[in-house]
Length: 169
Image (tube, rainbow, N blue to C red; front, side, top):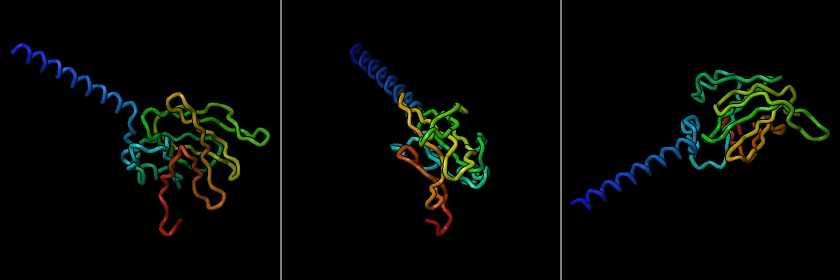
């Protein structure tokens, strides 16, 4: 009788420990509630979801993100930027042109929450660089428009979640 009781206690402890580990890993490494609400796959290879906005109110009406912070840096283009994973942090830098490259200048903002970035004076050269940090690796993205068709420029770390008008490509 005592042996069975000890076995049950040990099994109970193991179950509690496994549940705690699962909870911690899910809350630290799972996708954010914002990504989940946008039906982004939990195994997405992208780290950010980005949308080109016509106005600030679209963040709430189309993307269901309330009280989103707006960061402004010299420009009129609006980008909604949403970290997909909980362990992603974001640094936004001003960017300058050096020789033929766009490089980081000054750190403007740091966050791990969705935000709107209002930037880009020029259609040709972006004026911000977004550092995406995950697991001590840093990836870069400069929100801008594709000059061919006016769509959002993305790279392998960014998913375009912009709502398209009917009939638009």
